[in-house]
Image 1 (cartoon, rainbow, N blue to C red):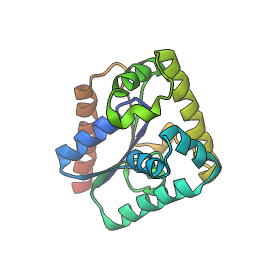
Image 2: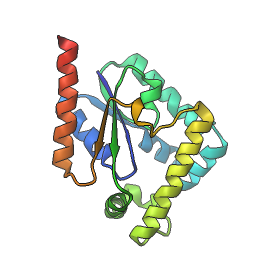
Image 3: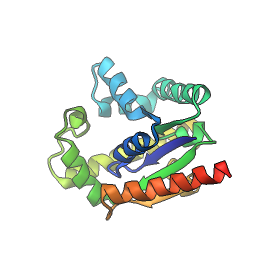
Length: 189
């Protein structure tokens, strides 16, 4: 089974995708890290690279090609990607939501980690983070609508949607894993 995760910034996608891959013994692929690596290779911040991607579809195309290739080479993995649900239609599609205020709190907390610092240019308050996240959301939405004609936030695209705003990591993990296992049981019967 291929399990694809998408969701709001700060919703816990990365944490939960990692926990699910560990629990199931599946490989995990994280397209966000590929974008960060591609930005670094170009001497850019993630935000700068995302702005470039808005005008140059080759960056998204490179990531999308990797997603498609992974799905042809493997039948059991967890992937975190804005578009994997679209490019791997037979995946189990999970979307995690979170309120803007809770997202800002979580993102500020994560900003202290080395690999996330470049995402919050000049963001020092929750309000700054909310504004940055809104800008990023608009760029993402516009880009995927323009390139593929898809709405990455349309809930009908997903098999399971969970609002993580008032849930602990453990609660989110438990609910997501319970859903995944129920679908695995359905497939085996």
